[in-house]
Image (cartoon, rainbow, N blue to C red; front, side):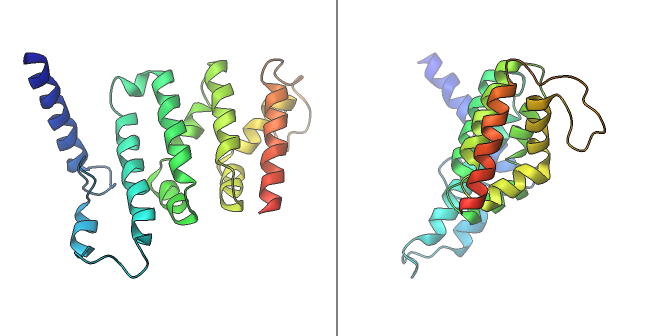
Amino acid sequence: AAGGAADGAATEEVAMEVEGGSDGLGATDLAGSSAEASTSETSEPSASGGADDSVTRPVQVLSWVLRFSRMEPVASDSTLLLRMAESMGRLSVVSEAVWKQAVDMGAVDLLDALTKTDDMLVQLNAMEIIERICVSRAQVEYIFKSGMAAWLVEIATGTAPGAEQSVGGGDALLGGNALRILSSVCTQGQSR
């Protein structure tokens, strides 16, 4: 019974942290409602057949995942951060509207941060997530604007895009995957 009380207190503490919302994500609770959504929702279903929920729910979950990714022990555990980035990647590509909100709230920045680590396994997993999120032109454009595409080029060739001369060959372990993912991302961006 003592463990259950401790778990309940921890859940309540997390719920309070999520509701507090000092990072501009909006006041949300773990039951799945937000202050904005609850004021705009009525007891009748919307004429669009719940289309608002197709954006609202993924964005709420994205905000929770983003918040949890900033808490300890997650913030200092690369495995947990990768799981959070994977979750954010899957949720953010639900629709163009969700993608836009994910970018605006900084949810995709976690993936960019993972590309800057010295841990090759984290980088390899970040590459795979980059490939999975590029399902439309908006995501591909983001990959290029954010510098993640330039990072892939540098890993593949050993040279930063636009550099006057090469500083060496590409990364022996990551270079092949970086080139494959870069070509896949570019192809996906053209096909949609």
